[in-house]
Image (cartoon, rainbow, N blue to C red; front, top):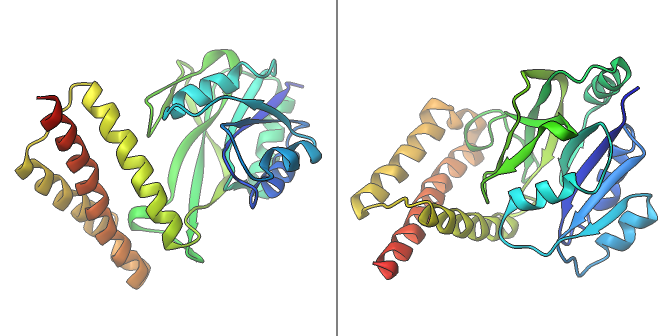
Length: 251
């Protein structure tokens, strides 16, 4: 039977850490927390519930955190979870089946369903997505500071079951993540040579709203779904405005 480590990035996840560690332990005894400087009880609670904790200072680079996590284990497989994610029972059974088979010839994608503001979303901005999360440890690395993604040459397969993603609990948390992600995206895009004009900002923003409201049918999630499509217009506009500000200062 192959071994598995579940890797979880954290910073001030006191409210989530016990639940995610206990959920992960249904698949493996090796749960590794990569903490970036929590000032609450995240580390203390993780250790108390049997997780290993490693520290890496936050450098606005999600890929760097995930690559660092790979160095904290010798397990055959790694599975990445965020602190606000949970494996459902069907997915847990599927992971255990893969480990028991001993085969290590694929990387695995998992369906992720979002729960926000007390609502489960099926369309629009929080449309269920598919994320690559389970890999043979020696076959994967990560790139991009934000919206990071793995690079792995193995064929992709999909696991049954899903991850339940408990994202925004309230609008304050949404605002905090908006500010963080748009800043990281703009800085990374600027370094990669991306540039934008003021008219381009407007058209990208309109396009973002159209994609979420029409293509992904965000209106079918009711009023909250429609409102999130509107906020996606603002999110898109803000990240490009931040890029435009960087290029204006640089030029």
